[in-house]
Amino acid sequence: MEEEVDKLELMFQKADSDLDYIQYRLEYEIKTNHPDSAGEKNPVTLLQELSAIKSRYQTLQARFKPIADEQKEIKSRICATFNKTMAMIQELQKQTDLELSPMTEEEKTAVEQLKSHMSDL
Image 1 (cartoon, one colour):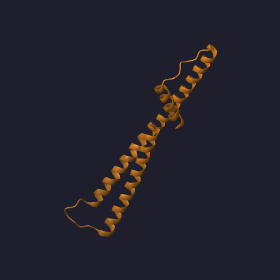
Image 2: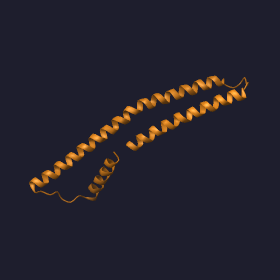
Image 3: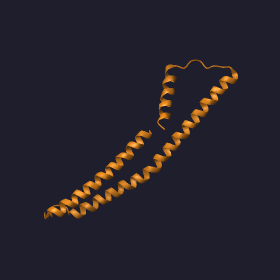
Image 4: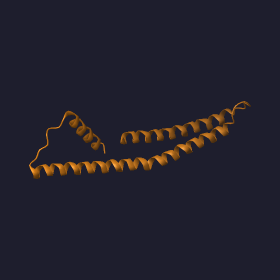
């Protein structure tokens, strides 16, 4: 899930960069060509709309950042709790001389998936 969050953040950064470039190109084209077509939309209005879109992207990205940070914190807490639980189970097994039955293939797969997700943190 953290990878998805990072991907989204990178997408927002790229979109912001793309919008900056588009705005620069539009300004350059307007300055060099000065289109005088009556039927076309005013280029200044287009630039203002582009600025508004960029502003919305920045607002969305600002709202997204705390969510991403909270997701990382929650994942970290889940991993810590999982590790403590596993340690407690192992300690109880030692103290009681009990051993759990061998894990099924499904359980082994689940443990491997958990370990891989925890290593991503």
